[in-house]
Length: 244
Image: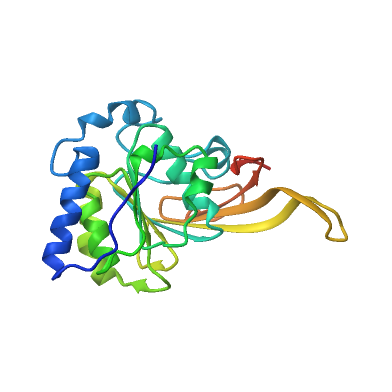
């Protein structure tokens, strides 16, 4: 099964493009503008169906279930982290979209276990990526938004935060900053498996350290209440995160 990719052509004006996007989303999921009862299997798979998104077991054991439905989070560093979340959400029966990230690897998402029939890709929105993400929130459980290095201030973010909350959709911002985000996740590659000290060999895995900070991050031993540290290892043929 393949992911749905929005066409890249530019339309006459913004209203036409947004309308076409709404029609595409309605066609692929039947959820936009409707109720979310079709995601029952997804909700049943969550530890707390009303508040939490699923993440890999290793990530959950390290930093807890910090990604809550209806909130905004920022992911920085290794791209494996947002793809891991996308894979977890779609594999559990939820719907996800990736906006404004033309270089994202669909193959990597598949190797992590993503269900492409539940994933929408809008690599080049053609207008404000934030506005496109806002439309997608009506029918998605997770929207990954690439900002291309830009920053969204708290003043500009208010409407999106309210929309995320009202729709129960999690917005995960990548490649940029979102002022006032509830959680910030930073993934850093710390080593490789399969490579000798002299740099020879075949890479079999990548070790990644993940750190969570913010209002929603759990308290870690000896750490401030607003932050915690977690370590995970990205390794194996599927590239999934495992406990270090």
